[in-house]
View (cartoon, rainbow, N blue to C red):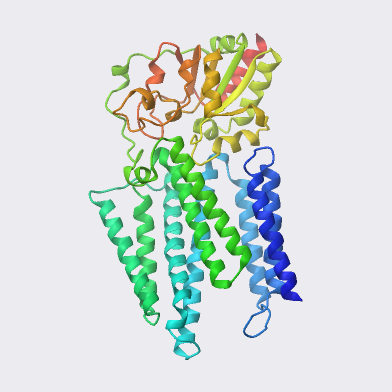
Length: 473
């Protein structure tokens, strides 16, 4: 009876995972989808703790103090981290949590191989009979370790603790390390008694994960985060195979498939192949391309009062949010400016680039936190159709995603990447702290165009002053 109820718990959890993922595709239902999936996960965890029985011994799980102690500590840490994290640090937290998932999958492989080795030594099973299980263990170990190490490097890059690093022949070395790890894994599957190979594979996989992500930087980081997320999902699915746990298998497959599809879609949005992202190291160098500001012309600044005047008498204003908006924690003030302009009869919308920020959906989450209506958030294709009818485009900290070099400079590393075509609007106002290049490390010709004006300063302070100026008009 207990097993039947547990199966029902797993079925309910699997259904909530699928429904929750479906609801995440729409900003209006994303929050409920997240809560629904979390509810299903809670059912699966509690069902496993209290209803699971061993097929071999018929015994229930024990060690309840350890289990609930771990749940309590992890729950407290996770809750505090989620509540205290700033929106700018959200990509870092996602990378770290994703890495922890990969580490768990790798540890499962290590622990389960230890159990198998003991059974082989005791003569309970033969080496040949456990080869399929060892294959799953090796796959989970390699994928989970790569995900963990890579996610930790991504976390370090996003918070500035780790610098981009590459050297001549690094891609070849990476392939050699991966080939050796896979060869060792294949031999371990052939002969599961060679226990030392497990730790060789673990070490090689960790090194590969580090070298795999180390040279990648700039605008490619959202793609890397998404790819590593899919790795963690596949590693978790391997754990589901090992334990014959349907809900773990379902969850892992969903995460792996969703992460893979998102990675493909983001590569498409950047007009680049996944292979080009992984070996091209786009944005890995922070050095601006040749061509200083003086070579492109002179920038034109605009005063706060002039910017407020132009926006107040516009028919349509499009706001382009970027990482600078997140850094300044200015999303709420931005929403306030939007409401003030609408009170004056100005139509205000937001243009969202798929890779703006430091992770997929970063700008959507940022604006949703400020209660910006979902229908005002336009995806890139829809926004580009409307720029030509805009009187003013206000760019808040975005850089690479509005750089016209992606369309007209074949020598640029971002050439071919679809961008927000803000230059089609009548007037472009760019808010930046300075003329420092964006995350991809290249100069932006948009800033030197005749219809573009620069409004320097911290985004939050500038928006607060704009609100005051617009109200006074």
